[in-house]
Image (cartoon, rainbow, N blue to C red; front, side, top):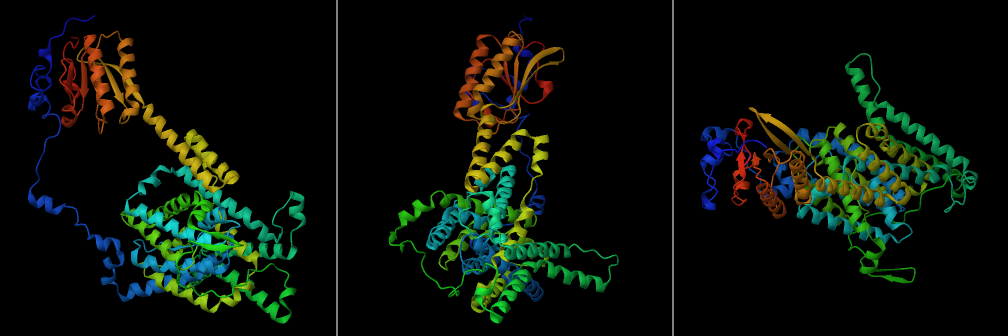
Length: 608
């Protein structure tokens, strides 16, 4: 045991009268010299570096008001080109995604036109394109397969309502609980499901249920398979056109590169158009029955009409009311909007300027797009990364491009409706497969195994669950695993304990590596007691408090209990880097000291 210490050897800023009134126990000597001193800036400096004034809430919500006043001719021309280009991209995608969701073509186009137009008025990112996506199509299929189309429309309404509430109550932080490995696994799993689901249409297999692998291959239609494979090869070849490089950079080569780029981004429209044209000519020269391909469903009338979502309807001699619809949709009412918000915010973050993203506004806008879409019989929608990339490459300047995209989609609905039935299903399947196959990312297998085993198992488990139990269960699995990991970290914080020496005196330095919440209070107490036992209560305990952001009641009670336990063993507890606000929460204790810098830590002897 060391010599008996003298409390006068503590620096003046650490000394105080333990018997004084609690209201005055923390004086200037007691810490103001070490902690939060206020230094006032002069008015010129404050004015120079003051934050810009926040826009009025109405301008932030109806976002078109912030830029329409400065809208000029160059912007209008750029948006016109981008809008037309995007329209040529979104039409074949919408038809294909509607087929993926088990719907006829017009429902995908309804979603495309209303989402594009609504985003013009409320959207904040010019590149974002709201409409049907492979993600929303597979989610719709997951929850609405073999159910009446009215279920899809009500799902769009409910998804929009939940997204709107998330925006109003600023619940975007929920997305932060879904880590990147889970998102990657979910995206890859969804893409794999799309590919596997579309192989039947690509190969012309017309059986609904396939009993065995041999039956699968025996029912392949050679003409459908040939057309599908040719379409995929064409799509992949046309995709490479945008990457063609010329040895010389001349005006001619620049124009040629632009032409090749337009051909590349229009590849979906070209494949759908020419395959449909081939079937159209075939039918008019022979007959519809003579066509050797499986064709899309016939669309009777495709012009959108405004009507309330079908909250009650009759189908196959059964009356569905709203509660029946909710029961049928199940967890899709929550999972579909969460997935849509996750995708939309991720895309917005990829294209936002200066990192200034209003996630709440994006959620509000997405909610309005789906709510409005449900009045036009649309399927659930969200942003699409591929279309957003096309908008960016097309030189879009403002969300106004969505007006032109919406008009092109409406023109397709009014003019091209009778011709949708001539589109081969194999060509639509090829469009879908070629679009999503590049979303399959297996690089985490190697990267995560080498860097973080926990993330590796989270990614692997989410991917397997997506493929085996469905995309919603895969996402839920990933979220639950991530939340468990967070709770384990909160309940078992990393705490490092050292025996250190300063000016010939030893002390035990306890350094938490993160903030300590009530879940980790017992772990910290156990570490302190273990350190006292190890060093036989010979040295003072210095607890580093610099990472503590806030004290809850459990944590304060733990500190008080630890101080009493150490006082019984005549051990000083030094709270290092604790703010005055937190100091004032603690009651007076004779063996508790506060300090900031290391030179102030140790007296010649600190054992009392």
